[in-house]
Length: 363
Ligand code: TXA
Ligand code: MG
View 1 (cartoon, protein in one colour):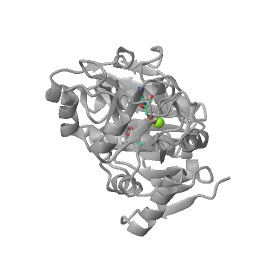
View 2: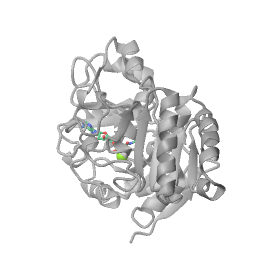
View 3: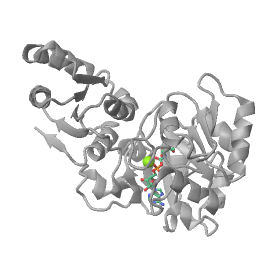
View 4: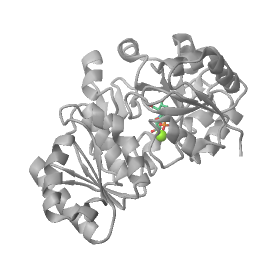
């Protein structure tokens, strides 16, 4: 068991505590910290022992490469062997921010960071705590999401504490993150960039800056059954809560009728059940359920409010938190109303497809 220091910066960035956390990183220790996407579990990117501690803390297979976080362009130049001309425009448009770029690596980047690959994933985060921490440490910081392997990425400090207390050297609690889904991972080693993991920065956003952008065919279909994707992390069981997750997409009325049918079936089987949907859907669904279920039965139905259908970024922000809450509430099944794969919808459906291990039905 490690002695984990918790640095509470939920209300304000504290320079004194930040320096202590930065010292830990410099000394080869592991420190979890908030970014604008999800919490990361950081360690010095060029220190093999520190990197091993990340894999160990997460229980993560070591062929699953890590993202290196930087705060200035000089750090980038020290890590990469080649940069295609179009990449400068992407950096100009999206850094700092939720876009990770995959480059050919320099030889000083340990294979432990890259999972044995000759490429390295790099991101410049925008979160003030992440920025200040890396700046103060003055070193590139490798950081996967700060969850135990297989669990949803943490978007709230308390879940980092829950997963990693006693397993890491430090946790900076900076409250809730703003986007809630991990960064877009973009391979920029080729003439045309290719999305390996969808996120907040969309295919359209990227194409509007550099003309065109491909999507790795293995994720384009959003089916968990598709074989190994280029992004090695995509092949592992991910985000899977204890509850069995099933996602329905298509015509809203049909989707809600199917969710109603499934909820009743689960409740009648004596189960506790969750519904993840927009608030408009719930207004409709809860009326249906009032007709078919008694009060005590309805107590076993938990609703996870994904906000307005007009603002799917709220769905993205809450998704991982709600997957964890469904477990806390003891849900046996979780029925989710899917979204259209436009804009941020593509990242939402990608994560839902994983959380449901491919149980996504178009009806
Ligand atoms: O938003 C994020 O990206 C968060 C925060 C902490 O920055 N980090 C994160 O890291 O999500 P992680 O380790 O959970 O996911 C990294 C993803 C994995 O899917 C991994 O396979 C991919 O990036 N990746 C890393 N290096 C790669 C490489 N050289 N080639 C292809 N994919 C790579
Ligand atoms: Mg992760």
